[in-house]
Amino acid sequence: MGLIKKKVSLFGIIVFLCGFGFYLQRPPTIDIKINKLNYHNKGAKAVPYDVVRNNSIFVHSAFRVSDTEIRISLIRRHLSRTTLHYKLGDTRGKVVIQCALDKCLDFFSKPCNMIGNIGIIKNDTLPDHNTLYLYVLSPDSKPWVSIDVKDVRVRPNHKYPHQLGVCVQPIYLHADYTLFINFFEFWLNQGATKFYIYRESYTAEVQEILDFYEQRSNASIELIDWSTLPYDDKVTENFNTRVYRLEMMLSIFDCIHRARSHVKFVAQTDLDEMVYVHSGITVAQVVEKFVSKRPDTASISFQSQRVAFEPEAIDSFTSPQTIQFSYLENVQIENYVFPRPLYSKIIYRPERVYRVHSHKQKPAELIPNSKKFSRYSNAIISSTDAVILHMRLAINGHFRMEKHDDYKYACKIRTSIHIFFPAQTTGLRI
Image (cartoon, rainbow, N blue to C red; front, top):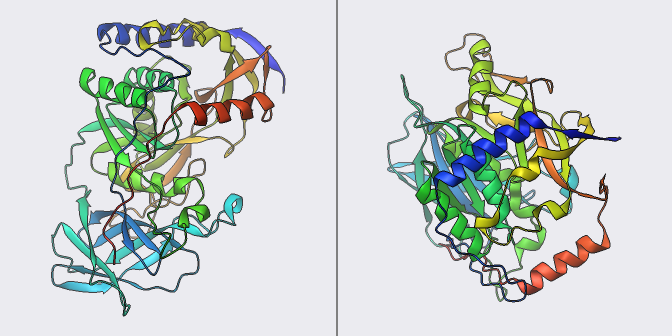
């Protein structure tokens, strides 16, 4: 895979002029000075999990997706035989638990047996109550835990408050606020007005940037606390040693369901990724145009291509006021587009998907009232029309293909000089 140095004029002009213009319209009121030896931090606050204690079930969110169905995001031990029960109003029953992915143990994380699951409640007579009670039949358990049910039903003639939104998987030990500035400047100028930021731990400076964009833009920024699992080392083991990357895949399921009825299209991307549309129109416009020709679309897959810039280009960024976007005018584009699903990213129509993945498209929902039990369709977009640009640092004109001693050293430095306050993990327990 060779490298081709290009002057990406169109990309640079769009991102630089639009992005920087947006930034100038909102004069920063933040005064952040970086002192690498004395960095003040604070982190996320959360009370995210209700815990079925002795049976190792951790419940995060519940979503009313239809008049007859509620879905729950939860984590439990693989092959657990614990039966979860529910009470909604006067209606009681069992919760059917399914794997969040095709297989409960992911290929890349088989030793991690605390895994994401989807709890399903189906009943033709579910009452319209907002509080769901969950319990297990155990001699030493409390009566129940309660959780609020988020109503995400799409009604006839529904109007979405937001056309385009973005889901960000859980961030942890995050200290680079410049990534968030690039992220928001790009997506705001691409038509995004809703952001779901899943957080575990980050610094005070990152929080200031989030606050700034929430106050000074017209976007809605929702922070979802996604903490480590609560445990009492005097009573039970630390389940977090058996969870893979904070159950990132479950957070995507949670986000897509949270966006139902609120956002028409939701992009699931990382902070260091952009969608480059070759025709120059916005992401919101290209998605609408694409779906107008394929009205049954549930998701659109974008291939990924790496773009690199020299680290010297951003060394001068010592505060938000010093950030420039001109470094994007001259970048290196790798002469290789990854085949799907490697590094691919997906834009979803939330109410049309069930299981989700960061790179792979899964079978979509059934089309309501379809006589042939037809499903919505997953689609792909050609890389000649639009592509994910994954921003990477280049070292002497080359991409780094593996971890380097400098990288390992930088990780040790970051965790030693920054103070990260993790999300709180207290919650109701049975």
